[in-house]
Length: 358
Image (cartoon, rainbow, N blue to C red):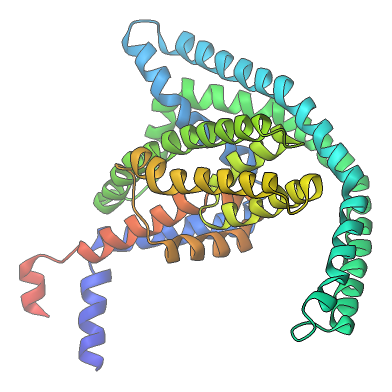
């Protein structure tokens, strides 16, 4: 047993490249776990710079010059972001406020419907069980209201920090893109010389992450637009708000689609009741989800990394538990990184002469 452990240790850790890879991964995760919240603007700037590097590089190769290319691409990115915010946020915000205003009425109708279930199914449900369930939910709603009030009072500080980030992040993106080569040279100077496996992981991650980001942006736009048009065509209230929710739900595979089904069904049920219109809408929504999962995702992500659904769910739960929303947002890229690291680490082997001497 000890010989096997010794053999495994020499195979995995005697190679300097393997040791370097392990140390860098441990250091990176340690920094993210303990200082991730503090470094959030820096991480966001790095991600945005990574996404914008491709058009900047193209314009630079066409002779524009890197500084002018960075300025133009960043200006276009900021302009499009502001345009989307100005066009969508007011409407979505108003629909969200209207929906929250109607939530007490929706909940009262839901309670009235739930209280009819014991009479409709006397052998399955007891009135006491329904009363206990409703009492627990009402208590939870009261607690949620208090939490929202506390969050609204503390959000003033968060709003000030967000305004500062809106200034700092574009500045960091500009300098990261403009001085990319110098920054990479400086980083390489403080890293170990034997970084063969790090380069292997970097090359694999670069291809997969580019495909993932490109495909995910297109999926959000397509699913969100189709959902909004479908909801508006069927005269569903809050169609834009629900369409945006459905579009962004694709960021969290499987879990996002399941969660966003509840508000869609609740609004449709409140508006139409258990009428044919309700079922038509749910069928249309189911068709959108089926086409997304069985046609759009394979088409957009044919070159991206394929992860088993179980691994995706574990990644969402694990990284979401560590870093909240951003952990969920970057769950698949982080899972892809873990997969690439393990692949490079397990495929790496010592030279034959070293293995024979073990």
